[in-house]
Length: 190
Image (cartoon, rainbow, N blue to C red; front, top):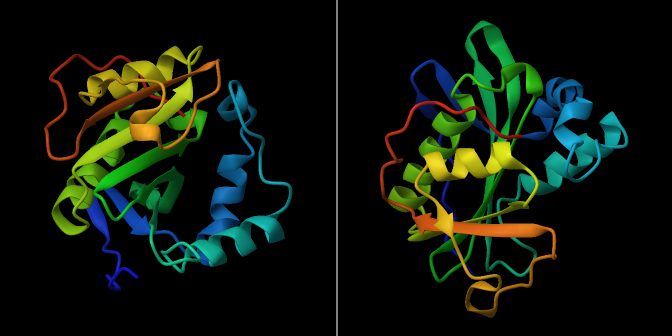
């Protein structure tokens, strides 16, 4: 069992990453209804009640067996607007699998890059993560560019036997505590 660690609110300039709770579901339900988000995978939440229940389950911050940390942050912009979320599953060996979703109205503004970097810094400093992994649909060039901009590199299809990716997916990794590559903004991912 992992020791209990309270999630912290993170900041990157005027972007605030709030530990996600069930109360975020109402505002995020509208964001997650954006059809552009699902051009490559997944489907929107089936109902607001379903999303509230899911977020409430994630508030445990650990897997049922107590071996993984489930960390989710809602992304709050100035004017009290929620733009999406970032999430990580941190394993006891220091590997963390990350994901992110941002409403298309907020793409191309550097928000996803700042949010993922703030999360990466927190995972390294506070949760002992040393390697970050991200899986995405290979056709999703926007997501690939975001990960490259954040210094992720292509990884083998089955990292250390953890899981197999689908034929239409790619996987990238990076050390948790490295700064992002210094490149011109190329757009954001969902």
